[in-house]
Every structure is written in structure tokens, then in C-alpha cells.
Length: 324
Image (spheres, rainbow, N blue to C red):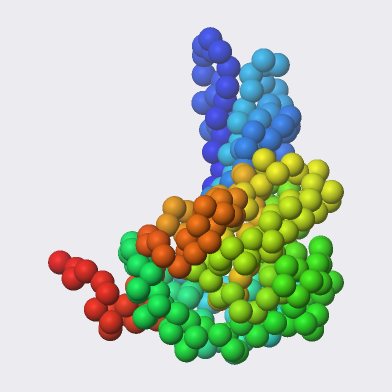
């Protein structure tokens, strides 16, 4: 845990900060007044308060940031100091646990266990290089779609079908529209702890099983998209008091799994919204209203990991520029 203490006082003279900082052994004398900010991506929080014994108009900021794992020591730490796991839920090969937890509010470690882990799981979680790719409609038809149908369906999305079939995670469902064409299931994403509203991250998973990507969407699917947008935002307002302008609603291209799903994230959430991946749902609807086959015709620029099978499929088909 990284801690930074920043005394705040206008017109300060003297050496009080240096004396305090030199003798500080714990934060027991720091009295929190309010939170200034927090970041889920940096795992940090900034707190405003004062230190006991300081002048009344002298404020102190405490900035807490979790340090990275020490890769050289983590294997020994896991085996030599057994830490209890509390299972949150399981679906197919994925199980989510809470691991241990420091004293007070410093938080536990979210522990995802994937077993059995396939070669594709290993690739997904391995550090990788990223490239920008401009995918034409022809590339999609000749390379992307055949790759998806060959490599990314079936057992790869069994866990999604488990949710739709109510075999798994039914207790986590926040909203269900059972219409076979325009309905969906709405539930919290595994990344969200379901406690901090500013970190809110949910997904709507379409009931239809014939829509693997953004490229699949046409004017036929506008009722589905409008339904997801309206009802998804509605459940977040009714449950958490979040107006639509507090929520980003988007789809990914390329997605992490090939079954149509829509992300709902609080505007303060910092992950999974990068340029070259996220497409705001309202913009998707607007584009299709302008032209029904918009996503079957326009080029889409995206970021792609070079370790993925799709990148290798593009290489084999000669679709990528020669690097040099």
C-alpha cells in the first residue's frame, strides 16, 4: 500500500510538516473529513482530513494507492500463507472468489479462478502487444466471420447460454425481458463489486443467439437495441437513482465474447471504454437509422492484440500491412 501525506495550509511558515512527517508511525491520528476522489483503475483513493495536534486550519490529504503484486514473491506467498477464499459464484469454467481482506476498509482481493484453463484462456491473460487494424466489410466477410464461426462459438460461450437458460447466475439477474427477439437479461458484470455505485458496471445479454458482433446489426434489430437502452437505463435509475446521463452504454468491437451484449458503466468508471473498441449504443442506433446496413458496409478501425487468433487469421490472409 502506497501512502502519500500532503499537508495543506495557506501562508504556512515554520517546520511543522517536517516534524510531523518525520515522526509519523501510523495514521491513527489522521481524522478523515471527506473523500476527494477515487480511481478503480489505479486502485487509489484521496482523503481530506487533519492530523491530531495540528492547527485547526491546517488540512492534510492522504492518498492511498495499492502497490502492484511482487511477481517474484506471489507464488511463495500463496502457498506458504494459505488465505481463505469465499466463493461468490460459479459459471462453467469460471469461479469468482473474494480472497482474504485487509483490516478496516482496505479491501479484499478479487480472485477469479478459471479451471480447466484452455490455451485461449492463457492467451487472453498473457501480456500482449496491441495494434490498430482497419477492418473493411470484405475483411469481415472473408476472414473475421469465418474465424468467429470456427473458433469462438459453441463451448466458448457456454457460460453465456448458462445465464440465458437460467442454469447459472440466476440469483444475480437484475432485469429480464423474455421476448425471444427483443428481450435480454440484465445483470452486474463480474468486474463490479455491487457496492460502489461510482464503479457500476453491468451487462445486457441479448436473448437472440444469432448476433455475434456489432457487424451483425441491421435495421431489423433496432427494436432490440432501443429496448436494451431504455430498460437498461430504467433499471439503473430505479435501483440506484442513476439518470441516463450518468451512464455510458456501449458495445465492444471486437468483443471479449461473441454473443451480443451491451455494457452499462458509470461515467466515472475508467475501464473498457478506450477508443478503437467501445461504440456508444445511441450512436450505433443513429447509424443504423441513417442506413440499415451501415455495419455491413463501413470500415471499422479497432485495436487488436497480436496474440489473438483473429490477428493471426488476418496475417495468414495477407490483410495486414508489413511491419518494419
